[in-house]
Image 1 (cartoon, rainbow, N blue to C red):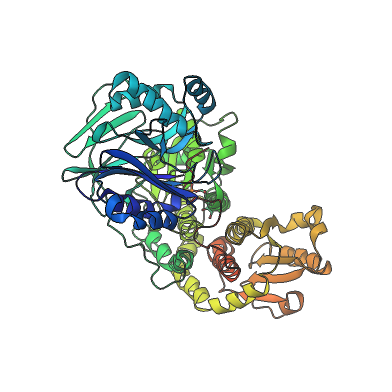
Image 2 (cartoon, rainbow, N blue to C red):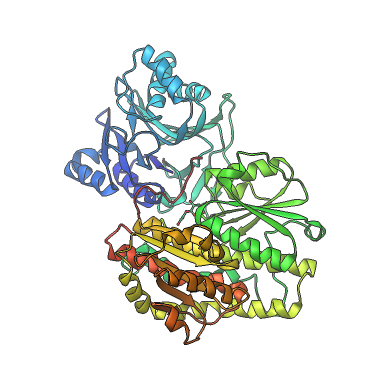
Amino acid sequence: MCGIVGYVGNKKAVDILLEGLTSLEYRGYDSSGVALNIDNKVQLFKAAGKLQNLKDIVNKNYSEISKSTIGIGHIRWATHGAPTVENAHPHSCNCGRVAVVHNGIIENYKELREKLEKNGCTFRSQTDTETVAHLVASKFAQTQDLTEAVRLATKEIEGAYALCVIHQDVKNTIVATRRNAPLLVGIGEKEYYVASDVPAIIQYTKQAFYLDDNQIVTLTPDSMKLIDIENNSISPKIETLPWEPVALSKMGYKHFMLKEIHEQPDVVRNVLSGKLRAIDENITLNEVTLDKDKIKNLNRIQIVACGTSLHAAMVGKYIIEDFCGIAVDVEPSSEYIYRKTITDKNTLVIGVSQSGETADTITAVRQAKSKGSHILIITNRPDSTMAREADSLVPVNAGIEVSVAATKSYMAQLISFYLIAIYIAEIKESIDKKELSDLKHELIVLPQKIEKILAHKEDIQKCSKAFSSSKDFIFIARGINFPTALEGALKLKEISYINATGYTAGELKHGPIAMLDETMPVLSILMSGKVYDKILSNSEEAKARNARMIALTDSVDEKLNELFDNIIRIPEISEILSPALAIVPLQLIAYYIAEFLGKDVDQPRNLAKSVTVE
Ligand code: F6R
């Protein structure tokens, strides 16, 4: 979380920094700031709240501020210290000559701060980052060399960081470094860019290189020097970024989330493209390098992920176990990493992540890798840190997802799991061919079914409005749609702040049923299949406690009208594929309730899209 950007060259630095921060807003939006060298003086401009507040400050004095051709910028997701102006980056030292922006967490900041305070440093913020500013300033006082000052400082810092540093006495120079946080350097004509992520620089250059851990780069308009933490010279691995500059436009939709929900039919087509060619042909997954004999001998699969990606993984467990007969464990990465890692070379470990930068999942896959497991990464970002850990990569091709609440990337992850499960099942010959070709056919027509739901979204909007004053919300399901209930609840709580929970319907009577009364909406995900009748009786139990009943169903049974106050009907679909259809109305319900309540749909409070801290 947090986004950083830097520029040194001949252009107006502030324009590039603010543009860059705009495209990094998905990484946080608690506060923002820039540091520029104006008339040979490092000056900081900072604002709490949304980036627009910083833009307003800059605009008031634009002619002065835009003189600078060097600067660094930051957008913050608060970890240490409240989202105030004092805690906003860039941070500086006592003499005000150094400015630092940071993404990550300095774990030993308390000890460092104590030491620096004893040496006379006065701290102005509660952040861990300010220690870096003082530390670099003190090292610079000893060495008069900014690269060396940063190098010596990083030797004392523990934790994760991407850092950009400027110093008033070292003209036209940015020093940047990283450890366990992403950072890339863009190369232009007599200019360099530094950023946490590609969108911040792609409109200016496609030539770039990713910094590896413990590398330090020193940039001036005319030179670039890369070293490691031991001061050895390194040649950067320059690559052409496979990205096109994208106009992040809402295309007429009120919010990115609504646009991204509508993109899902095409996302399904994209994921299938080139992999599912025809129903009588085997699936091709070119990026899966695990050989066929090893796949046949797999005795276990572990999947690690967080949040929405975890819910996709839970659906993946059902599909893989069902098709391939391999036991699958799914675990939140944040739990996986703090207990004994029991895995080996006969276990396939799958990491799922939209961003590919989630710190917990990166650590989890690294732990599994060190035990010899084959690592398969499912991600929307083939250029991410996690993708670089992969032995096999399944890029999900959902396109840039701007809204913090994940929608289309979830759909892409689900479809990827269907493809992986079919791929393994075909190699293992673990499932009847007819069943597989039926599923392939259903996958091909899935986009049209999603389109049908979207074409009737006004009905869902009406139903959502009726429940928008609820303080709580319960989603129930069983079997393969239990993760759908969890994901529906997560979508609702993260953007509307309503206390929503997903339960397996069978668990309701073991405790949660105590909460039911006439104020509590219960949404039953009632898809045709093995557990339909069971969920129906669990819904009866809820109705008997006067809950307000909503059904999400592909059944046309008229009798449901007696049990449910509201019914959202969706096209018929097989039970195994139903999570990919049932999630769409739930995304819309969350969207419409949040929109009706006037919430900040695309940038809900306290969240960031890329969670790069553990
Ligand atoms: C919810 C959401 C988060 C992410 C989670 C993992 O809408 O987006 O729960 O799913 O932070 O992020 P990735 O998938 O980037 O690892």
